[in-house]
Length: 117
Image (cartoon, rainbow, N blue to C red; front, side):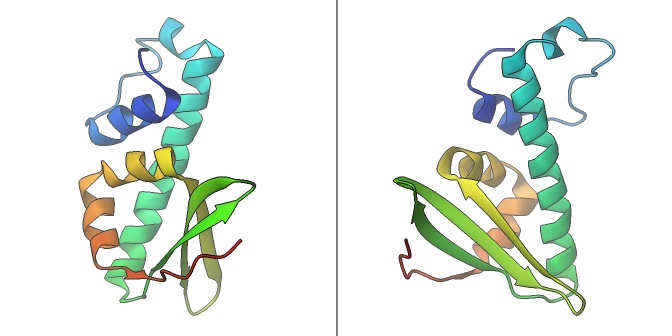
């Protein structure tokens, strides 16, 4: 598979359905592709959770932060039974925004612009 793991994950996230792991077994075997596929699974699960939160009317907060010298995005929301937070590096954030559902949900999210270390 060509591209960075983030680019591959974004392609997998926006393609319906993603390339079959059985049909393209060799393409999924190198460490680069394995990392991309793991990122894709994480982002796909996050899209489902974000959509569920939106459907339930739960407010999602997006906070840009800086950790260990890297810019990251923190997504957080609270359900009646739990609190959820997701930390994404900017390339993963951009890959997530490539998905139309995630882009729609996050466009209406509250942005906490305070920079925290």
